[in-house]
Length: 241
Image 1 (tube, rainbow, N blue to C red):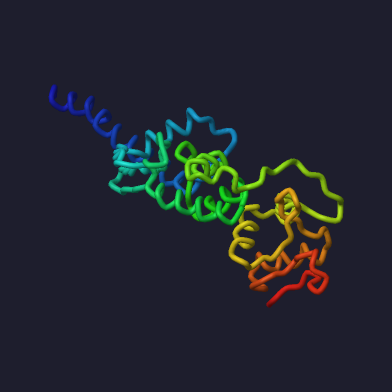
Image 2: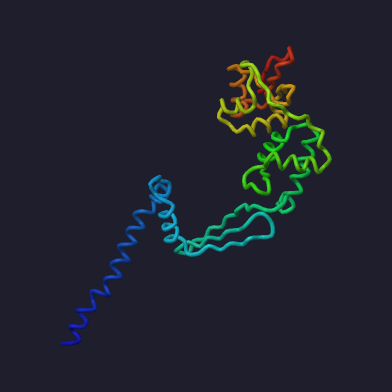
């Protein structure tokens, strides 16, 4: 009789963990499809996001590597594994994986009298970055390399300039079209977009619906080359399909 009473007393305790585990599993399954929504919800605090990650992640392994990229290995609960590369800040250009290539490219473009911000935009579009910036090349990085290569006086100093309303700067045109200004510089450098330059060194575009629409077509690959040079009377700004 004592044994039966003990069994009746311990049976609910034995069943309870199983019931809880099943309930938790069902809750996880129900929420799994909503995880991106929950994560992006403005009402989800950083503390809750960290708590959510602790529930999902078993461990994180970081391999610092020898240069500017660290390999992160995430082991999720359940056994799945994700591997990602993280760009790290480094102390010098020499520590960048493509540092030597970037220096050669800067010198090459500087010899064409491009300004530092234009060179930086081109290099960013080609996947380069500054040592202390994970996603782009800074003009100051270009300037330092250019000076070090003895090209200090090669580029005329750009001054702030004012223009009439019949023209747009590259940044203004990019804003109108809602496109990256880097894309314009790449098209100019590769000869797909022919454009005038202001005496200050800035590129200028006609502020006209036809010109703006032509650049939009180039962006959408409807044409493969565009000539918008204003200062050539025999070329009023035409496109080549």
